[in-house]
Length: 103
Image (tube, rainbow, N blue to C red; front, side, top):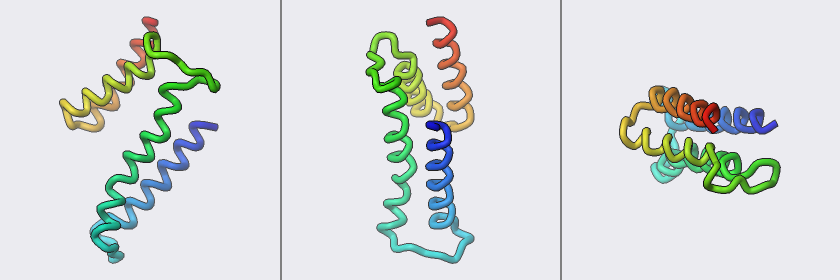
């Protein structure tokens, strides 16, 4: 169910960003609405990922043995250093599964 929710909300955000921000489509919004849409996807993804990182079946995961938290921190640092989306997704998934295998 959570994967369906993530995919559904991601597709809604993608559609909204594509229609309103694609320069070839002749539909223009005021400048302040265009600026607000630039922050929609990061805000939505943060609000979806925080419960996944910190909770499992309504139980707090903790911090010391939370591989989701370590993977999220690694992902943020890797993206800030490389600024390459595909490489950061691949290496972040590899790091997550490496931690899952070890711990």
